[in-house]
Length: 358
Ligand code: PMP
Image (cartoon, rainbow, N blue to C red; front, side, top):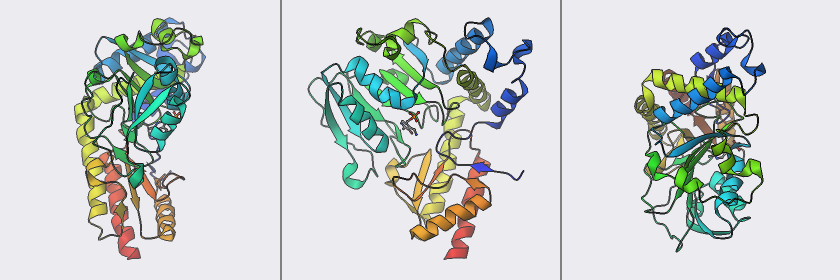
């Protein structure tokens, strides 16, 4: 099979070593003679996996002890509703509207209380991260999207919102860099970009915030249930959690988030430099200061040329470069598992394509 470079936005590339290990032990987990796919979620073997994953996430992502680490289902999309369902309760929350995903979070929040749009970059088609915020008087939380997967913008630094609890959707840049978790009340992320396969959603929630959650909710939609039961109230997505556990081992082996962050910066710089040095053949869609290091969004000079680019890239083994159907253009998603070598190969292809088509 010829080499494939996977630039899909999600589900996305996973580390080869993780895939190989999962393959090797798929039929026989730790000498049990059984597969991870067929053992009880109450077994000692699975207990070791879920607790191992939690411990490693705490270490790798530097999650303080006063936070619960949960594995939920329903994707980040369910979190759009679960957050306001648990915490909004007819009060007011502030939301920052930075793009396609923030918008979806806002839509759900409106079902549960008042939403104040504290800032929005919709005026310029979500090409930047706002810097001025119009906060409401006493919001129960402020919600932001750390990286807009479709629009290709990312918060490079998080503002200080004082004592307001900050809730963040980190689906597409979770563990791509070091962050100060203590600045957040709740972080959620679908696993399927940086930390695992689809099917599990990571939630990191501060105990103090958790306690403020409503008590009159259906059991499965209450964070308290999952915190009390260590994500084992019902059958969790065992295989997905197993892979997350392996991905944490891989991150640690790579040198932790400091090293991952350094490589991610190099990867993004390489692509953005290629774009910026193309004399307008490629054009980045986001304002430079807010460019995403995970999802590099760019246009060519016509839609026909974009289609040709995506098709020729595919023939050469570069997969998943088509922009999201809602915005068009091109997008290279370069999550943690994409090696620098793959990005170099893409940059070379882009230069070659430019030469042939200028
Ligand atoms: N938020 C962001 C930033 C995303 O990128 C995505 C998925 N691409 C979602 C939320 C929705 O995640 P899910 O499909 O897991 O519900």
